[in-house]
Length: 317
Ligand code: UFG
Image (cartoon, rainbow, N blue to C red; front, side, top):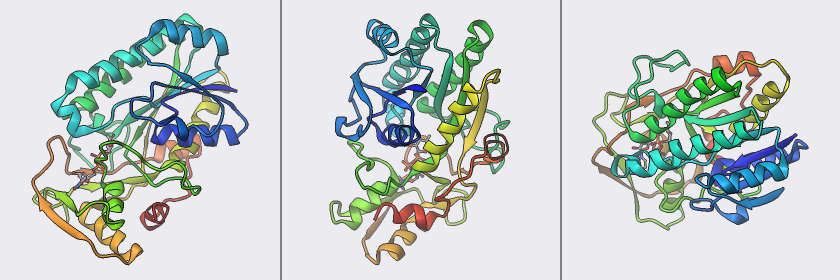
């Protein structure tokens, strides 16, 4: 298959490029390098492209005639989306609309979309399955939910078929160490803890210790980035199998770890002590997010390989 991997220079996209290439697909990365890194694209062609640029998208669809598009290109920081919502609606929502238009215009009708647990907001029950009400509490989650809603209409009207994957907390990196998480600024918990372990930061802050959770700190469900990438391939194979209905899947490991637990685990695994500061809550953070991935397991054969939190953390060391 010929696959467009939009955002293939980013953290999750670059892992996807590698896996899809190793599975024998022709991969073409489209990226504007606003947050991604050219040297993270280890395989296939690279095409500079901003998804806001309709002419460029059309040119690339005509050049490669891809069978399917995998879309990873989004801003994904909850906190930043609270202070700069325009950036999120413009890139994530408007940019994706533009990409979908180019797909329809060029008769490419298979789409894999990176969505997020942030579409649910504060959970009404745990674990969160696909039927859980969608009530995002930050512009990031809203920007992604709007795309999910657009996709339903694009399926009905234009026959665009899609698989939406809602990730919980992507973590870890590939064994070569070449595809690390390199956000600038970094805001994610695990990479920040690892920077503290390496002495690149003075301390790690815990954002809020008064949540209604086991120890007062936020609980998240961490999933290894290679497990995420593998299930995307299963998704695209499902779509290309013919007569496929559009689908939505939640992806996590079904187990929640608090910020304090993660910090303790890293100390244990690395054998390093570091400074921890109890700080204020960060705006837009739900207390607990834990996935039910039963549907993906049953329907796609999702079978995570690095499913223990200790093993996920070990890939970072
Ligand atoms: N946290 C800290 N200190 C830090 C950084 C984070 O205490 O220095 C806390 C956060 O407040 C949160 C938890 O650690 O409670 C995890 O935070 P991350 O920033 O690592 O991840 P998020 O849960 O905010 O967001 C991630 C993705 C989103 C996705 C979400 C779904 O970035 O795209 O998971 O769970 F929507």
